[in-house]
Image (cartoon, rainbow, N blue to C red):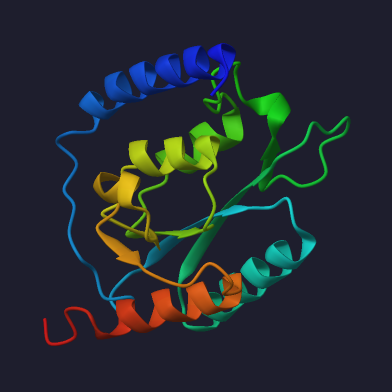
Amino acid sequence: MRLVKKVKFYFYNSFLKKDLKANQNVLREMINIDSAKRIGVLFNATKTNDVITVTQFADHLRTEAKEVFILGFQDRKLKVEQDARLFDRNSINWFGIPRDTKVDDFQKINIDILICAFEEECLPLEYIVATSKARCRVGAFSKAKTNYYELMINIKKDQQLVYLLKQIKHFLKVINKND
């Protein structure tokens, strides 16, 4: 790792630790998707196919009477804002921490379940997950990020995002079913 990357990562972690202390009293619990009313979906919007997949997934959840909030990160600098549900590199600081009103507004929503629809490392999205006040955070398994989630789904690297979302929905349907 280059020196600049190490310095950035050091400060990223320092700010993250500070922000995590503010969230240490958040009530976390496993929630069945059927009992959830408000669901947030956080995703990497760099690939067009992933945007389509997440949009279809969110539409499906809405047919089940869920209030769904979407926030996506495009890993590039855009000259013109394309979508109110997306932020890009212009919205993150030098350390990789999101600093945007869209992110702040998303974080303020009282979400029951935060579905993290991304598999690869993405520091801005991981920062949002880690500092989220959602009662239940669900995403792809990562050994280094186990303290960010209440439920992690282990899938093969070659699986598509649609498979991850199906698995997340399946496990959220069977968890705490009798409560």
